[in-house]
Length: 388
Image 1 (cartoon, rainbow, N blue to C red):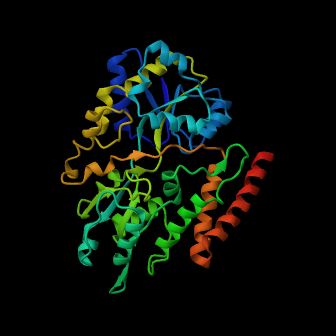
Image 2: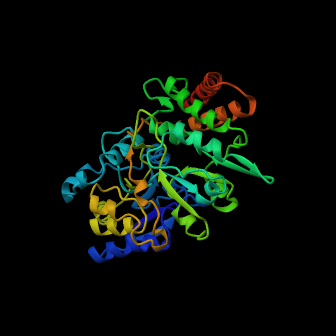
């Protein structure tokens, strides 16, 4: 049984959560892990070589378009009914996120885990400037005000109060799409997108906080250089485990005033059954085994957020991570926003918004102007892509 994965699971995790449970429950099935999107192992190349795996692990945010383009995704409806798999035990938002990613009524993938979002903070920087720690439930406006107290130059070292990270997480909390799926036109020039851009500009307009960095670069400022006081991000436990001397904790992800308790939409890790698989029933048995209560409970204890509704499994989150003792682990439990309709042009939309932010901060442009210009550029990109 071939299972392709793009670095979503370490070898140890693959054996623990997939290979061993599957072999225990179904002795005739052997799950083998192969990394894809390496030279000679891209999905398009595997299709051409007629060597597509039975299951491919990807995500709902930007991983599904390639499957749809290559016509690789197989509907799971029949297999779900045949095996009497209880779909209702999975978070409804996670199922809807898969459907939003494919724009198909039929479910073609099952989520097995999802990222969570939280606000990490460096206690030492707060203590250094005698600023109270952040609290659960803070709004973006409140966190921005807190960042002003922490953005200081101290003996030549520039400390930053807050790196808001990628703007698409703030927009995801509002369920904003990049493209209007009915017109295939840019959806960026709206009141809601202006709200996102205005907040990002407000944060980066704090004197000393103008730098814009995302993802790994932002995390590096937090746990390596230690000049960043607050960072909203996804699960960083794997990286943070390497920095035992970092005095950090976390609170819930900042929220919009009118949406208390709502985090960005679900960023789920998915198992996609390949249409070309000759062992579809066994492949679905593998997927079902990963979604068993025992495996999901083990994942949860190890700090992988379960997509099952079961509160017993949710409450076990991080319990076996000894170095997390004393951390505000419950900060991860928020309600994900409803998914937005996704299209194959969303990556270009993300680039358009990020470029608009850079334009606003570096050139002092207002949000209305940069969003209008971004929309015009994005529409041209969409048109070019549709002509190919």
